[in-house]
Length: 224
Image 1 (cartoon, rainbow, N blue to C red):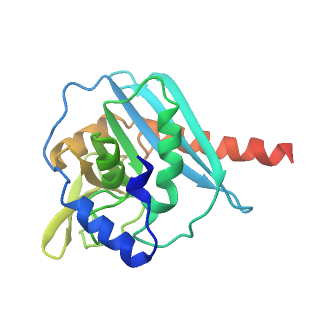
Image 2: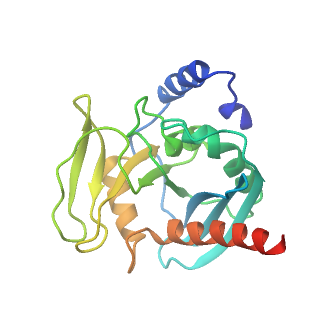
C-alpha cells in the first residue's frame, strides 16, 4: 500500500492526487458499522513521528484495540500534502491491527481539499475503506458560521461545489470541519461524527488517538 504515497517531486505528488481523486466515491458504500476507528499523528521537536489508531465499538464507543507506529520524520509540512507526510506511518500502524474498523475517522481533510484528496480520501483509496475527514481548521473554501447548538452545520463551498461542512459538535464550541473521505456521503459523515461525540468537541476515536500518539512521544522522551 505504500506505493500510494510514493513520489519524486511536488508536481508528481499533485498529479498523483489528481489521479487518485477520480476514484473517490461520495455515496454510502458500507454496511452496518460494528467498529469505528480514529487515527491521529503527532510529531516531536527532534523529528520523530507517531501515528496512532484507536478502534472502538460504534454503538457503545467501548475501546477495543489500539495500534501505533513510530518512525523518523522524512517529509516536511506542506499544506495540501499532509497524506504524504503521515500516510506511510499510518499504513504501518494499520497493518499491526487485529481488528479492522468498518469506518475510519481521520484527523485532517477529506474531499475539502484543493485537489479533492485530503488525507482521509487518500487513506480511503489506499485501504479501500470508508473514511471521514475531521479537521480543526479549514483548508479551502468558504462557509457561514453554523448555529450555536450541537448538530448545527453549514456547507463549505469551494469553486462553487460543496466539499464539506462546518459542524457544531458541542454547544457553543468551535465547529469541526467535516468532509467525506471515501465511500461515504455528506449526510452520513455528519451523522457518524455526531454519534461518535460525547462530552467533548472531538469524536471519541479521534480524541483517544490524539492522546495515545502524544503519550507515545512522551514515553520516548522520558527514556532519553
